[in-house]
Amino acid sequence: MRDIVDDLMQVWHSGRTGGLATLVRTFGNSPLPVGSMMLLDPDGGVHGSVSDGCYESVVYEAAAHAAQTGRRELRRFDGGSGLDVSADCGTIDVFLEPFSRNSFPEFAAVAKEIAAYNPVTVFTVVWHADPSVIGQHLVTDRRHNTELVSLPESDVFVSSYTAPPRLIVFGANPVAAALSVQGRLLGYRVTVCDARETFASPSSFPDAEVVVDWPHRYLNAQAAAGRIDSTTALVVTSQDPKFEIPLLTVALRLPVFGYLGALGSRTVHARRVEALQAGGFDAETLARLHAPAGFDIGARTPMESAVAVAAELLAARSGTLHHADKTAVPVP
Image (cartoon, rainbow, N blue to C red; front, side, top):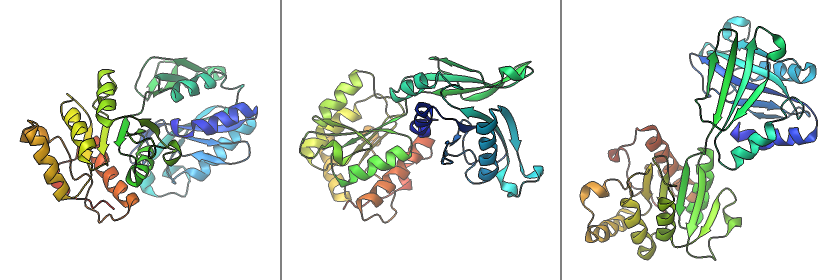
């Protein structure tokens, strides 16, 4: 829901009715996770997806039917049901319902909590012996797994939303701008921090929170407030020693983070290591720093460099990243 929450709010505020499809269960291969949604707005526009191309047309028709008739139902889509799809598409269960202010009056509160990065969970009855109960929603602030729960007389789909992982980029420059876009695509909440107010302009980073502060001071404050955890990614794009050495000193002393990377050539990194070693860091501690940051994909432009770093972030998040997997990424 998070990726289409603004589209859902537009339909909700319009007073009109759209159709909403939610992926509640998968069998076999499925490119999208359970909880993915597709909204058919009242004008026929499509937002989001539940099957990444396999069943889009038939789900579109089913969502349109739900919007027109008000019918709420759990449907199964697979290659054996007469649909002209690849065998690799697998089987999916999708809950279809009308979506409007009247059908989901609690949605504004849900959207508000998601926007504030507060935990919120929506329970939806997707099957029940009594058809009048199907489609009822219950909203709580407790955290749960996103899953389909089968009960003796009903099936309930649980959609849980928590704060997205953070990506904090230190240094306001073209690579940081490109990386903020990549970070958002990977589901991160992005912050760009730089002490230079002239460069740290919100208009240059529309997809990110922009903070004007000394990087090491900001990171210290965030850590003290408990806002750095095992999902947090930290990327240093500035190669100025007076910014990055104090910052890396703070970062390497943190008990936990998800990823720490610093851009620059191997020559720059050698000087960086010398400075950090002089500050008392041993080889084991320095191994926590991925530098030069990013996989070697031949990047030459800021966006290409951001893609290289984003790929390494994804590998770190999935637990498949090893230092031997990558080499230097040139910085434009």
